[in-house]
Length: 263
Image (cartoon, rainbow, N blue to C red; front, side):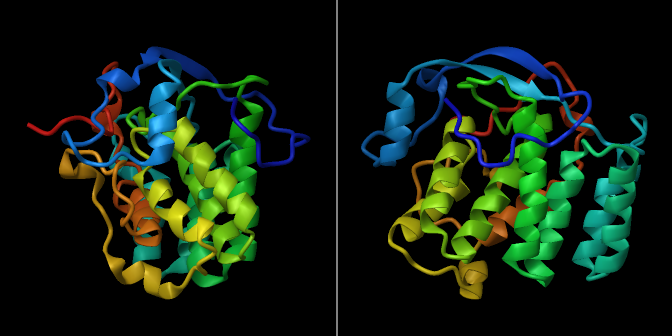
């Protein structure tokens, strides 16, 4: 069962919907070549067997379904990359003023704060995004929210970001619990979280040097769940921005799995 990490008394109005997509079956996922080690947490997830998978509703105020490049999240991402942080923040806050359930705006505000103001302000933003998502989950949720279903990504980003803040603040037990929960929610796409687990468990402080170790691309066509050397900070930035809002090609009835054997 998913462990919750945000206050439960938040008022969100209409909860976000959950669309069922059958079972997520670890037997059909790619866990590495024969003989390659599988992370112990992944082994536990595999042993748990198949679980129901879902896609969480995503609210994007101001988005034009006929022109996804005009989406405000993309505009804010571009501005943040160009170091126009105030303009990016304004766009994201405007989106929240229209609909406070826009979790993706909170995930991007969290990353701006993480990069410019530190983990304290960032954690507040990430936690609010997590709270909105958790309030929309059933009380005893034990399913999977795969990264391959695009609309799950804002919640997964917020949870990962909140865990990074806990790590940076040396709240070791909280960080470990969040990274573990992130893996259980998205076993096939949580390679950055697995990479974070080892230094957190070893009580290694987060440092800015973490950014320079080299991000792992999600577009390389193969799994990195068995690895433990991906860059969690650069990976979070890549997930939030390089892939932010590029949803047009994913708005179909077919999911794009995050982990499949490359051809």
